[in-house]
Image (cartoon, rainbow, N blue to C red; front, side, top):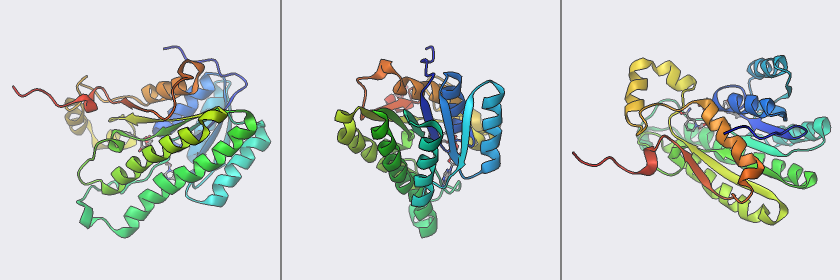
Amino acid sequence: MSAPELAGRVALVTGASKGIGAETARAFAAAGAGVVLAARDVHALEGVRDEIEGRGGKALVVPTDVAADDAVAQLLDTTMRTYGRLDFAANAAAAHTGRPRPLAELTTEEFDTALAVGVRGLFLSLTYEIRAMLDSGGGSIVNIASTACLQAVSGLADYVTAKHAMIGMTKTAALDYAAEGIRVNALAPGPILTEQLERAGADAQAGVAAAVPVGRIGRPDEVAAATLWLCGDDSEFVTGSVLTIDGGRLAGTPRFR
Ligand SMILES: NC(=O)c1ccc[n+]([C@@H]2O[C@H](COP(=O)([O-])OP(=O)(O)OC[C@H]3O[C@@H](n4cnc5c(N)ncnc54)[C@H](O)[C@@H]3O)[C@@H](O)[C@H]2O)c1
């Protein structure tokens, strides 16, 4: 799939400091879009910006906690003052404990954090992105969910709950703004090689890959490519959908031998 030509367009990415978010920002920039990089870690964001600018792209860093209303309002205000429009948004910010445990062993604080970023953060991101897109004549939004938005994973009640909620919000927003030229879709990636899986080491990675029908872990650039497709004109009739990108993992269970 060749990347769509996005010159003159503007893309905002939350969770852009690393992993899938950073790769998505690089892909938007490589396709010619001006990008806005949002996350909390300003140094990491500046690293992504320098990389993009080093390749001739255009990027703006706006340190943002997506769970804070004022911060997200400021993010979109800065975007519109700098670029004058917003065409695309990829919402990749997420939080989880990183320490899987049965539901009753999670703390209330851990649960609240996952929902503050994944649900309240998505609500705020969508709210201000949609307002900016209404002022720009339309747009396309991709929410980076997870296969955990469709199927539970034991020990991850906070993350699974937040990811399931993302789907309800994606579909409702798609219906609310379909007539106004704003499309809203979700991606449900399976295991993707980012920091957490990199840190887990080769043995753990092999175990994860063995549970994927195609026999490998996915790459951030594969999620970025799907995001760009969902933003481009080739997917004009696609809204309110959840696209799995998981090497076949959710397609079904293997036949008994
Ligand atoms: N890597 C995988 O295997 C995988 C699989 C499925 C879905 N996902 C989803 O893809 C997205 C990116 O995941 P990843 O693996 O690249 O790394 P990650 O989960 O560490 O990335 C999360 C990003 O969100 C940012 N973030 C966290 N709290 C924030 C806040 N309050 N405000 C703003 N930004 C905040 C982080 O700085 C980071 O950039 C996440 O939504 C994750 O759930 C990842």
